Length: 491
Image 1 (cartoon, rainbow, N blue to C red):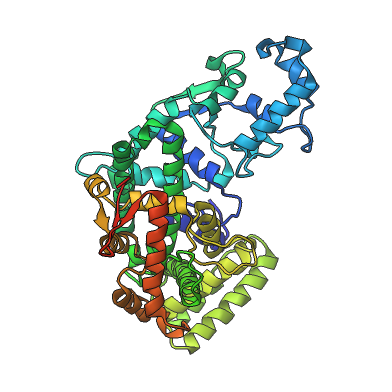
Image 2: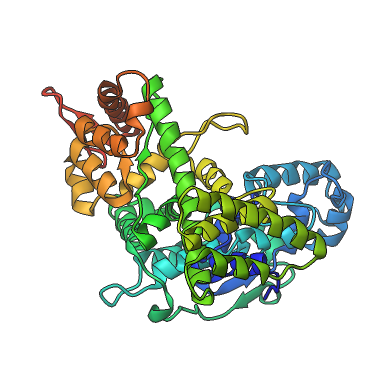
């Protein structure tokens, strides 16, 4: 436990309130997958051997292929006479397959590979940011006496190591004996009272459950790799949605809309989608301020400027330099917010939030973490650090979110595009343009419609049609002569 007051606030938010640490740009899909999968199967594997193979010749500090031949000659077809050129070629192939997200480093301590079965699930690494634990809590909570079917689906998919990808590496990982590599234990489910719950978590749990049911209904559950890919994709989306909407779910404040840009090159949609993305980031900052207020309130005698100043003076810092710099900044922020009319406790909370972002989140703030999650889930684009981000969703993520919003019967029978829009709005506050008047009103309430140039109302309808065309191209939609578009599975 930190003694530095500002660091204690950070720990309290991540440990006791939010449930994960959103302050790094190192978190990638394999990290989230590794944490979630480990929780679901209660098993880890020492995959150092395959790590040695995947860090291919040409990468810094890689083990030479000649050394690989000497060390693993017992599992090679030609033993010690194997050609180094053949080993190099295989290692480059493994690198391409198992390091698609650039989560493998020369040091095994920090590395996580693309996971195709339980053989690739390893012990915890820092870049997981405890997101896997957070997601497992949502899946593990008993609702109507049952945990999420996603857990069993993941267990079955990870147990299946007959896919071609796992076959490539199983001999390496299991050498010389699989018993020496696997650490198998029981799945440790948290107690229901220990799982904090709110409306956003409930919406995400509903989405996970429907996704699992639809994977079975459509037959995609028969392909273990597809199951893992779908669930990881929705897991990243869920983490993004919770981070940006927990201020609404926990404190009942503004519910930020998510306007999906269907890629129709409509300027008003681009601008409005950018603004909804920025509003989501702002919601994270507001959540931090509200949570800080909840944390400091019991320790301050009264909601007065004098008592808040007394609390600031009593703050402890890990060094004199931090104390001199940060305390002066907090006082300045606090005075400024008070002069603007904020109540002292709220002013202090906002001052501490800015100080936390400025001094302890120098490289990647929780608001910036939205970009990390959004881009890597296929929800936010375009890619590139300088590009203005908006909700430019890719087709795979669109499919996954759709599978999480419909019941199996609705998916098989098909529902109208407008009905789908209503379901996405109800579940995730996602806007796609199917009800232009209603969605324009939502954007107007957020002061987004007023600052968006062009005919936003008209372009919302065009955006919906572009999205309908995407569904049709994916085999998830069918347009009839009367102009009605049905969304469903292979209609």
